[in-house]
View 1 (cartoon, rainbow, N blue to C red):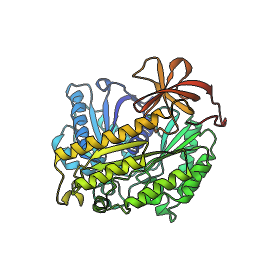
View 2: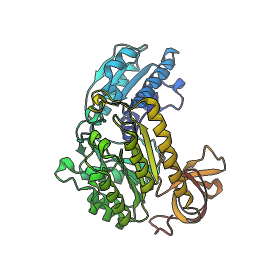
View 3: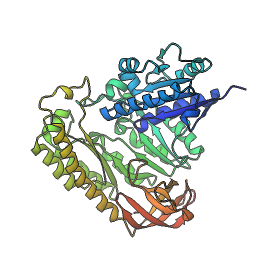
View 4: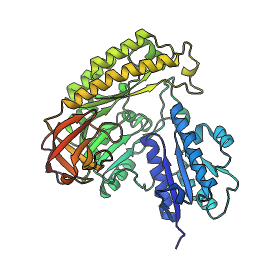
Length: 456
C-alpha cells in the first residue's frame, strides 16, 4: 500500500484558480495523498496563488509567510507554491522565500505529484526545482459543496484591456473542445452535481479558437439536455459578445438560470477608451435594455473600477449616474491597482489614493442601496432554492441560494435548519430580507426533474 501523506491546500483567487486546484488534487489523491484540515498536522502545504491585483498579491505573500511558519516549527516537510503569482512574479517569490521547496507555474497539474514525491521522503528543504509542463484534463476533487461545481469552458484571454495582466499570465484565449466539456459535465452530474457555473476569462467568446466564437448557445443546449443537472449559470460574459442567440437560449432553456455576470468596468467614454474597452455608455445602456427585454426576470451582476488614471470628477459622476439608472442586482467594485507591464500603469494623471477611496465609498453607498432595495422587493414571492450548508451566522438556519445568486459572491437565502438539508432543492416563500440576504420558509421539496413551481 502506498504511504499516505497529509496535504494541506490553500487556493487563492477566483473560481478559475479553484478549478486548477481541484484538478491538482484529482491527480494527487490516487497517488496516496489525503487532505489535512489543519496545516500543523500536514506533511506538505500546496499554495495555489493569485496575482490579479495588488491586494491579491499581498494576500499571496502573507499566506506563503504564514505557511512557512509551520515548516519552521518542524511539522511540515515541504511547501510548494504554484499558480498565477508563481508564474508572473517568480523571481520576487524566489528571492523573498528561499525556504519554499518548489515553484510550479500555471498548467503544472501533472508535475505536482512528481514534485511532492521527490520532496516528501526526505527531511529538510533540499534544492528547489522549477517544473514546467502542461497537463491533460483529468479527474477533479471538488472543493465546492458536492451539489455545485465550476465548469471551465475556456482559458486565457485575447483581449487588450490596458489595465489587465491576464493575457500575459494565462496566454491567449483557448476554448476547450465541446465534447470534452460535455464529458466533464456528464461526470459531474453522475457524481451528484446539480448546478454548473460556467467559467472562463470570457465565457461569451467560447469557440473563438475553434473557428466559431458563437458556440456558447449550442453548448448551453447540450448541457441542458444532461440528466441530473438542474441549474446552469453563466459567469464572466463580455459585453460585445452577448448575442441574440444567447439571450434566446437563456429565455427558452429552463435549466439556464436567469443570471448574467457582465463586467462593464466603467461608464465614461473617456475612461472606457483609456481602458481599451470597445463600447460606449449608450451601447451598454442598450445592451442592458436588450438583456432585460429578452429575459425579464434576469439578475445582472457587473463590476466597475474606480480611480482609473485620468478619471475626472465628471467621469466618476457619469459612472454614478449610470449605476443609478441601470439598477444592477449585484455590483463588484475595485479601486484601480497599477499593474506592472500594462499600458494603464504608464498613463498620466493618476488619481490620488484619497480620492480613489472617497469615490469608492460614494459608489459603494449607491450600489449597495440599490441591491438591498431589490433584495427586499423579493419578500413575499416564492422561488426555487438550492441548499448549500449550515449557516455560520445563524445556528438554527441552513444557507442556500435562489437562481439569481451565484455561489460565494452574492447574497444567500436562510432556511430553518429543521426544514432543509444541504443539496436539497426547495420551493421557498421569502419572508424577510437583511442587507443582501433573504430569509425563507419551505413550501415543498423539488425532486428530480420536477418542473419549477414558482420563481422569485
